[in-house]
Image 1 (cartoon, helix red, strand yellow):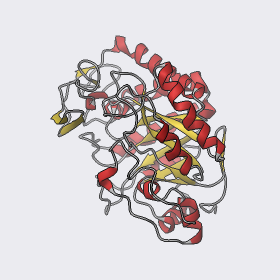
Image 2 (cartoon, one colour; image 1 turned 180 degrees about the vertical axis):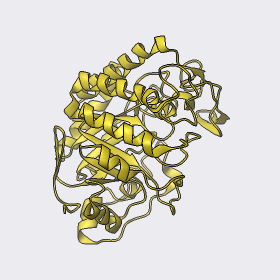
Image 3 (cartoon, helix red, strand yellow; image 1 turned 60 degrees about the horizontal axis):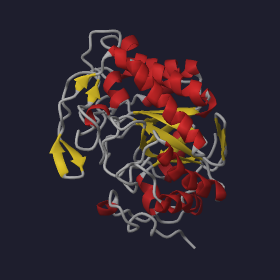
Image 4 (cartoon, one colour; image 1 turned 90 degrees about the horizontal axis):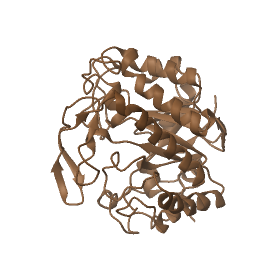
Length: 357
């Protein structure tokens, strides 16, 4: 069986190890969603990952609702990303852009107009905005007539990512955001061709994936899903057949890799609501399969040994350990990230975690 330190081919990307940097929102862009120079330092510090998956990056103004998050819908944003990707490549790294539409989780004070979702169901809890936490707004159900424009937004963002120097893209279809709101029946109460049956609920994911693959190549297109447990109010009553269908769909399209975030029963960031779904997805999906959530080096290697996954993505460990692969290889202790600086705008807690000398 492969080790964490063995290379892996992810479509067009040759990754030198199987320690993937998971997407991590860090809120260091401008209010206009333009990347800033400090982001180049941050990502370059972590270039020893087999592959960096960027923080979630908005495909449109209406789809981006997180303060100081970056976008990829205009030329100024493309220009802002170019130094970031160049810095990663200069350190020998590889980086893909995660494409993001937040759906009903966009607050009108951050996004543009009333948010959209699969159905007119307000998310629970509060939105993080420039003016503090505010209750989520009631979304409107996305009309079928609007889907071609949505697909065009994804295609444009994907092309912009390649123009900005990214090695590929990952479609964010997880964590209770727009595509997840269509996939799972807890949020999707539609009665048209995008709701009801599993075949209908996976339709938007398939259309988005094909639009992105048509724009940049299937070999540069990945997808992220969260098949198990509640994510920002989004759940599913029977995820095993749903995500088996997702795996089959994406396997047939031929994407470069599929990443699944599935927390374990002891996770501090969500709990599973059903028995593990990853083994079901593994059987259905024929390409490289990456698992995420709550792994350390030992647990990660055990999953590779089991054959359930081909690589493991690590999120929070990469925040405080920019040289995470080296620390894993040498068995060195890991630093603990300071969660009070996760979403602040400065260097503290962002680029000041030292690597092991």
